[in-house]
Amino acid sequence: KRMLSNLAPDLVAAFGRFMIDPVETDTLCRAKIAIVEALNKLEYDEAEVFLTGFRHVQREPRWGGSDDTAAPLRGNSAFGLVRIRHRGVVLLLSELLADPEKIARQHAAQALGAVGSEAAIVLLRFKAKTGDKEPEVIGDCLTALMTAEPTESLAFVARFLDSQREGVAEGAALALAESRRLEAFEILTKHLPRVSEESLQNVILLGIAITRQPNAVDFLLQVLAGKNEAAAAGALSALAIHKHNPTIRERIAIVVKKQNLRVLQEGFARSFGARH
Image (cartoon, rainbow, N blue to C red; front, top):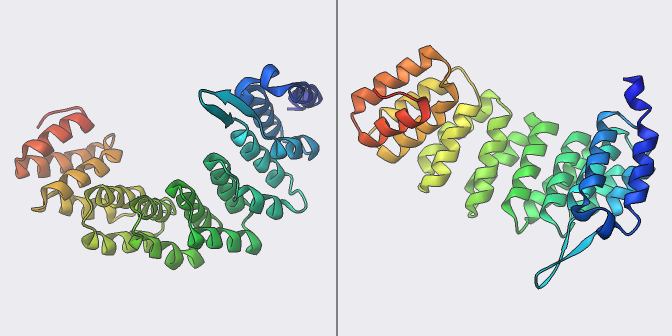
């Protein structure tokens, strides 16, 4: 590892060179992004290169205008600042949370979750409540909250399941699911009957599977065996995460055979690689 760490000064020097006439020397910021990622892996602990990357905007021409290609660089640099515990990093992340580029705002939310301080949590809650034009950003805020403060965030995140924006509701479902908490499983199963949109229903069913709770498979098998064909198909798709478990696979096959529905038979063949 020490030998690899010796590469850090050369990487920092190369980063500086790519900052000279950057549109010409480093199209799409590919090299600068790769350098920051490498420095993070090497646990480089000097702030200057990360601060430079964090502040960089690189507008490149495209048909009819220009695009800022440095948003991923700003995001990766933010993680570097979080990793080295740079003083004032939460203030910097509050700026990134208002960045014009979606991917930068997403990185800001994820980085705030990694910080996990009270100030970071306040920012994440504020952003979630005030909203964003891109539902994925709100989803990342909710996931970050479940990472930083899972117990206290459960009820807050669960409220977003009722969002009128389906993408936000889906983000809330996945944020709860990825916590793999029993309480999250219970929230999702209780909310499922209230959902009429098929796409959101499918995300909640997938979320139930992702929780990996002991009762999740039994619950999904009950949905699979039910009379709602769309819900059954969604449950089958969610159960596909267990396709390499022969015991669960056989239980699924039995229900699919009993249901005798073409959509389920074709779904089983597609997801599990066999016909029953």
